[in-house]
Every structure is written in structure tokens, then in C-alpha cells.
Image (cartoon, rainbow, N blue to C red; front, side, top):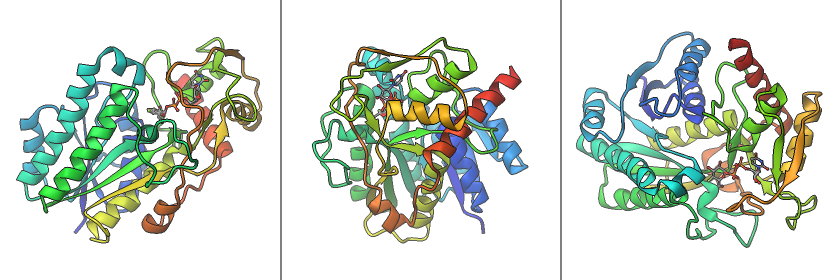
Amino acid sequence: MKKTVLVSGGAGFIGSHVSVELAQAGYDVLIADNMSNCDETNYNGVCKILGYAPEFVKMDFCDSEAVDRLFAGHKIDAVIHFAAYKAVGESVAQPLMYYRNNLLSFMNVIEAARKNGGCNVLFSSSATVYGEAEDLPVTEKTGRKPSTSPYGNTKQISEDILRDCVKAYPEIKGIALRYFNPIGAHPSALIGELPRGVPNNLVPFITQTAIGKRECLSIFGKDYPTEDGTCLRDYIDVVDLAKAHVCAVTRMIEGKMKADYEIYNIGTGRPVSVLELVNSFEKVNSLKLNYKFVDRRPGDVVSIYGSPALANEELGWKAERSVEETLAAAWAWEKALAGKN
Ligand code: UFG
């Protein structure tokens, strides 16, 4: 019997890649999304890659009755919860919107899972919980820092909700994956990142500049205490990241967890500066990017990269794609999008 995995927010950037990898690993995928931050492009891409249409439910995870109906109507073996807002700046301007959406939806998922016989819950967390860490690379034992944005705070609180729930409710098991900086796109160029409006993140800004949608990339800060003066990040390929979810879900479903709640860093362990990333993008795609240095962006940490050793060992997962391959995929996706417009 195939096991079923519910992917909340499954039409989004990471959710769509995870849906593909899960289906290709033999899971039945149930995709649910309220489409508040995406259109149908990625879901259609998932269907094309797989050659069939996984079940899709349009719904809002803040609607507790709808979530309950979903769980009551399907035998769900694991749920991966992506459905959340993710823009740091917007969360500072609209904290209530973030707390309500991100926390309520997650509590509704856990509550419905409990009511319907229990479930394995995988939460999509972020390296943002580490803040500006003193010792790098960070490991899962590195302490969390008080969050500097409501967005980051919702990640911390959601981790705590899951930790407390697995303690109280034996029918719930949980894993939190802390992602570093997910970038790239599926090698088919059928799914990828679709930012609305002006991108906040580096790679979509780079690809949109290269295609001519943006005039010039602003590199935020050139006087950081790093070798080339720009910030260091741990960029993780989105397909590699998706595969980590398959490993984590399988670990839960097969009952191989060593504790009822586990946390894993999902990154490469390899720090890359903003300038290095820009240079690699230019090189691998044989083009010149229009960029300039501007002031630092408020709230940016200088350096953050993580040790993936625990995930390597316990999940049997390892990041495989090089930054160059990932940047080539991101560019192929941007070009594919331009072809559609
Ligand atoms: N950057 C630029 N120019 C841009 C955009 C970004 O120079 O136009 C720089 C940033 O200053 C930073 C690096 O590129 O040094 C990466 O920035 P991103 O916005 O792509 O990613 P962040 O590291 O800021 O944020 C990511 C996730 C957040 C998460 C955060 C915490 O997008 O959701 O990591 O780890 F909260």
C-alpha cells in the first residue's frame, strides 16, 4: 500500500519540488494550497514532470474545519507543512498577519492530525532561528537567538509548538528541518521560484536582472568582515533540499526516529559570498550581470552556514549539486518563464 503525504503549500517554490521528489520516491502526494502567494504554474509543472496530476485541494490552513475535513477524508501518513508567509520585511510591517497565518495554520494541522488518529509532522523551519551565531558552522546544538523579525519568530514558535505537542500527544511525531538559503530550480525548468513583484531574495533578483526585468542588482554592503566584504550564506539547491524531505518523511514513516522530535540542518556546510555567487552565475551562464554595491541591508547577518553532518548521518542525505549547476538551473528556469510570457 502506498503511503500518503500531505504537502501544505505544495504549489509553492519548495513545496512543488518536494511533491515531485516524494511522488518519484513512490509516495501518494496530496497537495493543498490556498494559492495566496502563487499561481498554477508550479502545480502544472509538477503534473508535467510526473505525467499525471496528483490530487490537489484548494484550501486555507487557517480554516480549522477545512483542515479537519481534509484529514478525515484521507488516510494521511505524514504531513509536510509549508503553508506560511515568508517575507521578513513584510512581517515587520504586518506582524499580526504573520502570527495569525503562520501559527494558526500549523496548530490546525497538528490538531486535525491528532483528531484523526495521529500523524508524522514535518515542519519547514529556517536557519533564521540561529540569528548571528558566534561559532560557525552552526550545528543543531547551537543555541537559537531571539528573533529579529515576526517571520523568524513564527519559525521559532512553530518549532516549540511541535516540540511540546510530541511530548503531550504520543500520536504525533515531529521533525523540523532548518533550511539555509534554498535556491535554483528543477532541471526540467518546469518548476521554480516565482516571486511576486520585486524579489527580496538574491538569486531571483540576479536572474531577473540577467533577463532584463530589473535594471541592476544591488549588492547590499561591501565592507563586511569577510574576505571580499560581502555576506556569506549557505546556498542549498532546491532539489537537494526536496530530497532531504523524502529522507525525513521515510525515517518517520518507517519508525526509525531516535526521538519523538528531531531537528536537522539542511545545508551544504559551504559558505559562499554574495560576490562569489554573482561571479559563478556570470561564469556558468556566460553572461555579464549589471550590478552595483549599495549600503548594507538592515537586519542582515554577516555570515551563516551550517553543518549538515547530522542530516548526513541520520537521514542518509547529502547535498549533491554544485553551486554552478544550481545557478545554471535557476537561469534555465528564468528563461523558460520568459518564453511563456
Ligand atoms: N542580497 C543582495 N541583493 C539583493 C538581495 C540579497 O545583496 O537584491 C544579499 C543579502 O544582503 C544577503 C544575501 O544576498 O547577504 C542573501 O539574501 P537573501 O535575501 O537571498 O537571503 P537571506 O539570507 O537574507 O534570507 C534567507 C531567507 C529568509 C530567512 C533568512 C535567514 O530568504 O527567509 O535566510 O536565514 F529568514
